[in-house]
Structure formats: structure tokens, C-alpha cells
Amino acid sequence: FAGFATLTKLSDDLILQDFFQAEFRVNPRPENIVAVNRYHPRYVISAFTRFQLNNFHEVTERLPEVALDIERQPLFGTGIMYEGEASLSYLRRNFPTGALRQDYESARADTFHQLLYPQTYFGWLSVVPRVGVRGTYYSRSRDITGLDVEAGPNPLLPAFLLPPAESDDEFPLKYGGDRFRVLVNAGAEASFKISRAWENVQSRRLGLDGLRHIAQPFANFSYVGGDNTNPAEILQFDRYQPSTRLAPIDFPQFTSIDSIDEWTIARVGVRNRLQTRRDDTTINWMELETFFDVNINSPYNRGDFSNVYNNFRFNPVPWVGFGVGSQMPLLGNGFTEINTGIRVQPIPALQLNFGHRFLNENPFFGNSSLYELSGYYRINDHWAVGAYDRYEASTGFLEEQRYTIYRDLTSWVASLGAVIRNNGGVKEYGVLLTFTVKALPKFQFNLNFDPGGQNGEEGTSDFGGFP
Image (cartoon, rainbow, N blue to C red; front, side, top):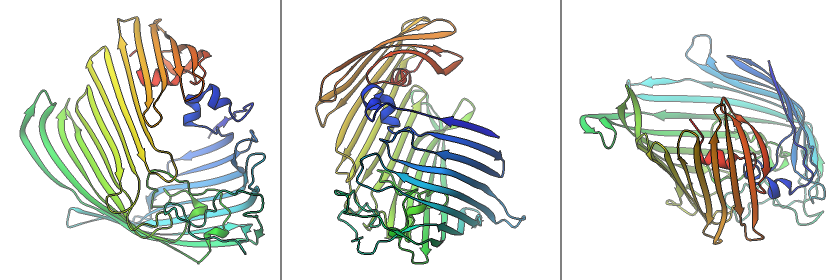
């Protein structure tokens, strides 16, 4: 058994944004949870409660929830694999005090069971067909009589997710009776590998000791059908959240239980890897993964195709790393996102990092062209310095400057930093003093006068620490 509790009581809605901006960017609405888990190699049983401790935050309360997750495992030696999950919960969606939306609640019982049959054909083709069934009971539903629930102009927003209300009575909440929804899913994953080796490729400068190319085309077909339950009638607790990334099309990986609608989607792509030998092991010298969705019928993207995604990683030598994650609307309408990262360690004492995040014409998030530059230099065994700068080109603001001095105290590391922050308003200045136990780097003792950081996270995570 294992248990934990996470409790965060805030004085007001702006306290994190004003004084702990690093934590605010990662977790703007900290959860309050008490949980107990029972772990077994074949299953996990958990019981937990989540509640609204800060009434200015929206929280989906679980009062409580008990869940059973069964790991994928062979079924009676037949070659068929089984996995499943079940949960029983009382849920309440609490909106912030003063919000125009009305709180709602319901009991929910959910169970999911799936069979898979992994097989290899012809000695090279891997195929994993699957079929599953999900049953979900709700003690309450939503009466949508008289509501105009239609697809809006945003093709990435499901029609059954009502837009934000602009008045108290624009989308009045009326409870309906109980609902029992049955869904059936089926699909198959298929992939194979083609490889070729060049043993005579040798380059000490590029870190090459032989070279092997592996190409792996893959496809994942997913179908979900139901009993014609209108998802707009389902009270949304575990709901679909807009994102720049593609949602999973498999279960149980797709966790938005209350936003499941009928779909037929095919995800196709290819993985390319260049491998070499280093230190008696095989490493991925270069990787490129390309994929996209064919939306035969998708409630989450009404276009015929998703963006085309490319994930590229290049690590020629241990002291250089380069990566690009991008998505572009090459097959239809969409938005553009390109994230670039470079890591260089030209000498053992110096590490430099550069990052650029570009987002354009996303229907949920504003345009951004964010540059980040950080460096860490170890002067000697006792002293080191670090710097971090973040510039947003779309606004023209140098949003953050952070400069830090580190001192190795044998069992401890002390750091003294200064920070300047500019988000378009009044500039903020701060000082941060941190003591870190080297044997326990996650435990820190802070004298925090930083108006935007949290526990020195940016200073330590961006610049590294003493080895």
C-alpha cells in the first residue's frame, strides 16, 4: 500500500501568477488530493478524493473515486491479451465563485474491457488487432431540449462541448434522468521494420562506429461506435481538453471518458532511426518520426486530415544534442507549431542551451515566437555561474533575465540569483537564495525574494548543478 496527500491553500487567484510564476506556468491550478493505492504486478487499486480548497479555481471534485486498473496480461495461455479498468465515483464540477456556469454533479460507474491478439506474420509483419467494450452509468444527465448544440466554426472543437456562457441563462443547466452508455471499440496496429547496415562508416568526429538505418512504417486504425447516446447529454467531468498535440486513439490511453463520441480514425506514419555503436552499446544517432491522422469520422477534428507531425532528434556526440518537433497543415487547413532545442557542451565546464518555440494560427492559443537561452559555467570545483534569458518576439519583450552564482559547500550547494521580469507591465526585480542537499537534490531550503520563480526551479533546472 502507498498513500499521499497534496494540499495547497492559496490566498487569492493571482498569488501564483504574481509571486510564483515558474510554478504557475507548470501548474496554474494546484490540485488538492488525498489518495491510497495498492500495487500489484497485475493490477492497481486506488481510492482517492479531490476537492475544491480554493473556491476561485474550477475543480472537478471526486468525492470519492475508487478505481481498478488491470495491466495487460496473457489470457489462459491462448496468446490473447486482456486489459481493463473499472471505477466508481461521485463527481462534482465546481466552477469558480461568481462564474456564469452552474455547478453540476453525478454518480458514475465505468468499466472497460479489451482483448488484443499480438501476432507476427511472414516473420516480419507485426499486427495487433483489438476489440473492447465500455459501459458507463450516470445517475444524472443533461437535458438539452431547446439548446442549440451544433458544430461551431472551429473544426478542432467538438460540437457537444458548449462554448463559454456570456450570460446566466444562455446555456441553462437542466438535469435529465440517468443514462447508461455502451461503446464498442475495435482496431488494429500494424508495423514492420526494414534495416540496412554500413560497417565501414567510421568517423570519430561524428561519433560513428558503423551505421545502421532502420525504417519502420506503422498504421493504427481505430473505430468507436455506440448506442446513439448524444454526448451533449453526458455531464462533462473527464472531458476533452483542446491541445496542440494529437489525442490518443486507443483505450485506455484516451482518458476523456465523458467526451467519447463515435469515430473512425487512421493514424499512419514512419519512424526512421540511424544507429551506431558507442561504449559497447547501440545508440540512436539520428531519429525522425513522421505521422498524421486520416479523419474518416472524427468529432475532434472535422478536417479530412490532421497536421503532419515531425519529431527529429540528432545526437552525434555526447556533448551535442539537437531536436525539432513540428506540425504543419500540409494536407489541409490548420496551424503551425515548431519547437527547436539545441544543447552544446564544448568543454566539460561549459554547457549552453538554446530553444525556440513558434506557434501560429492555433484556434485555442495565441501566436508566439519565444526564444530561450541559458548557460552554465563551472569556474572550479567550488564556484559556478549561470544565466537564463527568455525573449518573446511577438510582443518584443525580454520577459525574463536570471543570473545565478553557485557555491559548492561539499554536502550542500548554495546559489544566489537575481531576476528581472518584464511581461509588458511594471518590471519586477527579485533575489533568490537557495541551499540544496547534494544527496537529496529535490529538497531545497529557500529564502525566496523572487517575484516570479518558485524554489529556484528555473535556476537549477535550466543551468544544471554540480555533478
